[in-house]
Length: 579
Image (cartoon, rainbow, N blue to C red; front, side, top):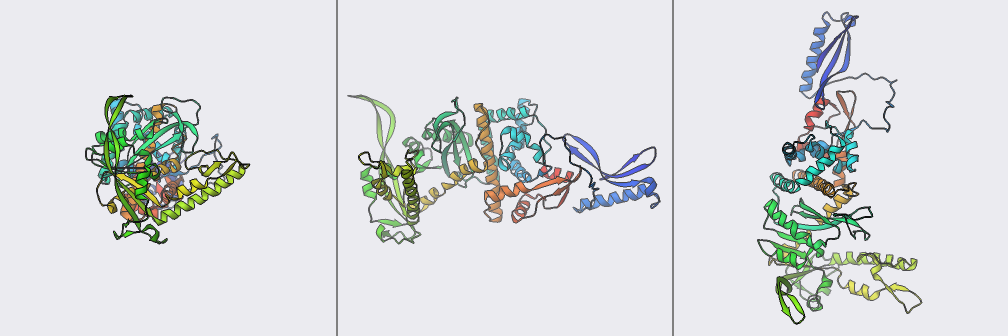
């Protein structure tokens, strides 16, 4: 704060002023008018000395984090009609907390170094950060994110075309970026890579022509669309580790090993247990994860097991309790049991040696028996859940028969329980044999592994697999990873890289909250809190908070040491907090 003196031919005017930064420039703005010399000299012998004393006292109070300020209000002032579309003067400062995570990942230096190497005329760091906070707080297209810059307390200035050039920079350095994210996040939280979870999902595009990346395939909603597939690895603590993008027509079972090789090469992570669903557990994947210090535990679909194996397992007797180790007959297990019961069987699957020999019918590949441990578990609560879900499907299937809408769309569709009866006057009915067959597997779940550890230690590892499904749910629902308003393959990949970094930043912030407060806040609670942290300018230098305090806000303040729990802020204070 300083005393601003403006002399005119008629009088001398005194103002309270502050120097503020706007972009790369500074500007002195008048906050309050003290009055004129002619008026003040009637009260004070030396108006200038008196006012300088007031300004000093005010600066001293600001240094002690206490200040008083007043503003002049013109009740006759009307709104500015110059804008084509109405805008809000609310500025979000909730992203300051995301900026703390961003800085912990040392991303400013990473992107600034890339700009130095490439002699870029724009700031990749500023653009990527703007895209990240928009993806987390208010997901939009890249153009939408650019047009939303004024919704955040930022001093960034770049052109729209620079956004797309920054996406090109991101794509060209994607492997180095993922390696950097792992190493820097490892400094904040010791990354637990003893167990790696893998899953793959697809994103469809509303286009009618394929290109090199977007290929026709079956989307998760059952529709045939041009797709891209995203494979994602997650560590034992639920933090995203590595991702990759493949065309939509690629068999998802072929996506795991190339990404594992990248993890080994780029991150230096070698010894881990690979955990995945039944759709990502091919013999090649199991074989790859049986060497080099790697192991695997993968879901084994029961219905795909040979009948001989199922007959050995699905008997009533000899189910071992996880809690006690005692053996039980499955018919004696009470409905309210909270225990898990299991059996173990060694099985052999053929391993392709990659060697061909000639037989009477031509060349064939030589196989070798691949010994694996099959674990099947039974849980009463999952049996109840499976039966409740089936009853719901049967009700839907019955309604579909009545409505004559029986065309099946997917394996999980209720229509799988409908059969066609051509010899009957009634065309369709519920398939009772299919219902009875599926019911045999209610409450049962199987895994295959090369590990010989105690089953009691292995099952909790698989149980945490839900967290990678939660990662994809966050990307699709909260971060709105699709629709994607980009056409170039490289920039589409960069879009998903932005989603990946945003997911990691959010997970790290959530991990901070959990480890330092022992409170498991939901994503809705976290994002809503950050979105509501807005300030509005009262003049060029003074801002007023428009939000209320909360338990979550004070937890964030205590963790990141950002004092955003005041009602009023000077612009220089907000500038300091945003750095």
